[in-house]
Image (tube, rainbow, N blue to C red; front, side, top):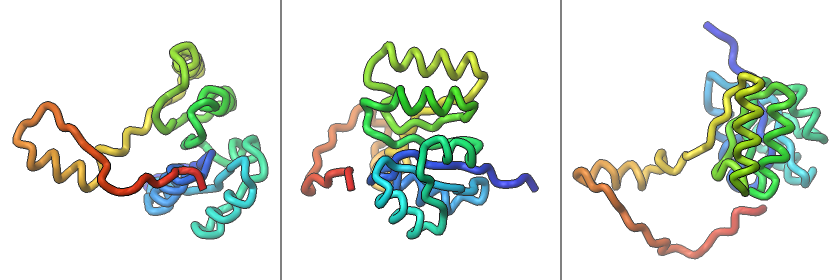
Length: 155
């Protein structure tokens, strides 16, 4: 059996929390730490999940063999490029970047470094989405309206 991949999460707001939580349940992954620009939030998530709160992004990159990035979109390129330049494959929460130029820089860097760069499209695994697709009988378009109140993602 192969050893679990040491993975870290950069940005542990609402979406990053979910990424970290799911990584904890995957036998193929070893969540070796989390980092957030808000140290108290990183500590809160780390304690809840039994992992380490890293005090710098670089510390997390040193510990992890791959990272999930769930930071605000305007800094996707900055954080993603740092991870790729450190030689780490990246799963980036959508969208890939704020601009086409930034997205191109991420893709070019991943290609130059021969690293995986994946965009997270996890909504397709939402149980409601799966139920809708199985009941859709070949539907090609679905319009969805939020009926609940808005839940801000930032904690």
